[in-house]
Each structure stands twice: as C-alpha cells, then as structure tokens.
Length: 226
Length: 226
DNA sequence: TCAAAAGTGTTAAGTTTACACCCATGA
DNA sequence: TCATGGGTGTAAACTTAACACTTTTGA
View 1 (cartoon, helix red, strand yellow):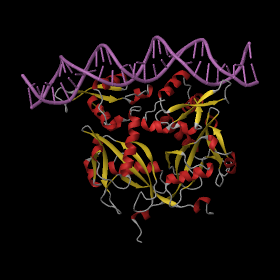
View 2: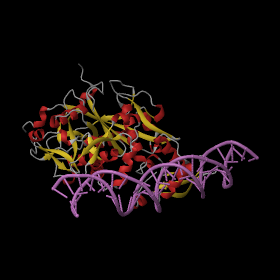
View 3: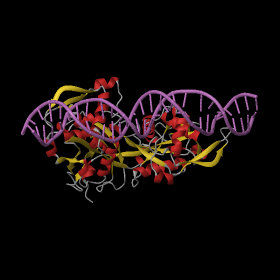
View 4: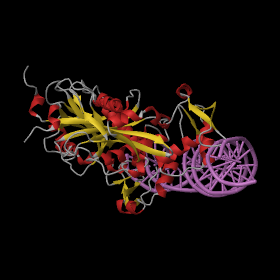
C-alpha cells in the first residue's frame, strides 16, 4: 500500500481520563487512584488509560471505567480534550476526559482496594497529577450546567431515595443551599419522580418516603426543571 | 534513553477541525472548503489540519484558523474530541473540533478563494466529509448554550452594529423569532451595550442607531442575560 | 405619498424567593 | 419527654410574554 498523505504527520499517544463522581453522606465524591506506573508513580490521579489501536475513544473510556468499577452500564459524558505539549511529564500524551455518574453503593470496596482507589470529597481534593484537577473542574462545570435541565442526578443515587437525599445531592453539585419547601414543590410538579410505598428509616426516627425516577414517564413528558 | 512505559501503547494521528461561524444578511454561516488532498479530495469539509509535534492542540486550531482567515485574535472554544475508529476513511485520525466566531467582514474574499473556501448558510449545508456535520451540530449546540449567558455574540458582528442586526443574530443562532420590544428592553438594561452617535443608513431610509459592546464596562458588571 | 425599517410601554401570566411551624418516632 | 429529621402553604418580588402603533425618509 502506498504511504498515505497522512503519514508525513506525527502521531501521538492518546489517553482517556475518567472523572468518576459518586455521592455519599451529603458529599459529592470523586474516585481517585494511586498512579500505578512511572513517571510519578504513586501520586493521586484520575483513573486513565491509553486508547487502543482499534478502539473508539469513547469505548476506551468505558473500558477504563469498567476496569476500575466493574460496571458497564454507566452514564458518561465527554468533558473535552486536554492537549498541551507538556501536560504529561512522561511523554507527549493527548488526553480526553470523560465524567461518569455512578451510584456509589454499586462499587465494591474490593475493587477500590485492588487499584488503590478511594472516594475523595470534591471539597477536599489532594494535589493531583498533571492537569487532573483542571479536568475535574471541567467535569463539575459541565455537570452543573446539566443538572437542572436533564434528569442525570438520579444516576448518583440508589434506585429509591428520599427527597432529603435528592436535595443534598443538588446542594452538593451546585455548591449552594436550597430551600426545602421550594425544592419539594418543584419535585411534586414532576410526574416522573414518584413516591413509592417504601420508607427509609435509616436517617430519621420518623422515616422518610422513598421516591424513584421513572424513566418511562419521563420519555412521555421529557420536561425537567429543578 | 530507556523506552518509557508509554512506548508500548499505540500512537495516532491527531487533527483539529475548525467550525468557523460568521454572520451576514441575517444568516448564520459556516466557512467550508474543498478538501485539498486525498482521500476524498474535493469534498466539502471543515478547515482542518494535523497537530504538530511540539504544538499544543489549541495552538494547532489557532494556526489552522489563521491559515484560512489571516486572523489571529479570534474567539475560539473547544467543542470536543471525535474519536471513532472509522471516522476518517484515510487512516485512523482522532480529531478535536473548535469553533470560532468571526466578524465576516474581516475575511477577505481572496483568502477564501485561495483555499476554495466559501461561506455557507447553516440552514443549507451540503453533504460534508466524515463526521463534520456532527461537529457543526455540536458547535451550534455549544454556541446556543452560551449566547444568552456570555457576551460572545458580538464577535460575529462589526464593532458597531444596529439593534436589528443584533436581534437577527440571536434569532439565527437560537433558531427562533424574538419579540422586538422585549429584546430591546433587555438590551437597554445592559450598561455595556452602548449607543454611539453613529447611524447606519444602509438598511433603512430612516437610519438606525449604531451600538457597541464596551468590554471595559462589562468587566465591571459582568452580568449578561439576553 | 407611500413603502420599509426604526423605535417605543403596558399589562397579564408565570416563576422564583422568602419564610416557620407541626409531625412522628426511637432513644 | 425530647431531640431529630420529615413534611407542609402562602404572599411578595421579579421575570417573561404578549401585543400595535407612530416616526422618519428616500424613492
């Protein structure tokens, strides 16, 4: 085969990095790991990996996510490409960041341990490798801009949740207090956030009603405003 | 030098593609060019180019933009990375799309000609190379989400513009009609959109007042809502 | 004189915000 | 019995949406 016109141009390592968000005890969290190879082995970083030869970039992100969490049916969204010449001190690597929203209960402690991974509060991030903090900020910005327009927050909660949990989630993502009555009023207007007959007794003596997001109802009336 | 850990991983061609928006005669336009090399030479496409070895990805986008337009102080924003295995039929190429907003008057007809480039209406796009139409849709979506929150629209207009031009621009970007009186009321509330003593006589017999965006005032009161 | 675009305010509807007390229960 | 979190409504402020006529001037 004749060399293509393209072959005169340089090639680059291309990686993906995953910002994996979780939510627990009123805190928005990110899954971090100890970097397992040189250079800068042992530093806190996002979970990442190199794109393979015959792999879509998005598939690479799914693969990396699954490696760490064992989960594959996960909500993911691209944050963007990070391509400064010197962003990686090992060699030139262009990295594409994705964020994922997962129900933290679904990730077993084992998997975390195997990769020296742990959930850190968004408000308490340690120094991170390369431009990973920038990537996290980018992901949070994107998440904030979506959370009031699309029903993505539910991905971070168990299938059934209390309204207090939901409100705490919104407060954690947006970084501001929300009025309880106003919040519940809006929830009440959305037919696809449904009260179940379940009751959560873990966080209060009285017990709180459990709600669920019904994606079928949402398909019929896809209007979300929280 | 010892082979780094990275070197076992594959490398890829990385390109940038530019969605260059302009605005003329009430129409939002995109600058397209005839692809100048094989494969698929001659097809309509976005202006693009390969990232160079010691060049930031963003710098590559600026360079490509300047090549085509001769301009360098241009508003640009990353749209995202496009990384499907088969998106480019020539070889595997991962491309990072950027959109640019430019005052169409600043691009000389010559430059366009040299690159077989022309301005096409957003509503009248021809079939495009690869996933370039998807990139344009992504860029438009991003632009729409910004236009009411940040004063970026002015980049598409000459330094002095009439309120009718500004309104037509918003209508073109958002794809919907806007009420003239409501629009002008909001403009009037923004101290950084200032009436000049200039009058445009080109589009009406009566003449319309020319306004300008004053970035200095905006720095002091950066609250934009249109 | 008339066609064509510029310019100008008011009202109703809807949305957002602020705000405080009673309820149910387990310890 | 009391401490803890769950649950509930109303009114004022603000924002958005709908709507039509007069002005200027060159052809």
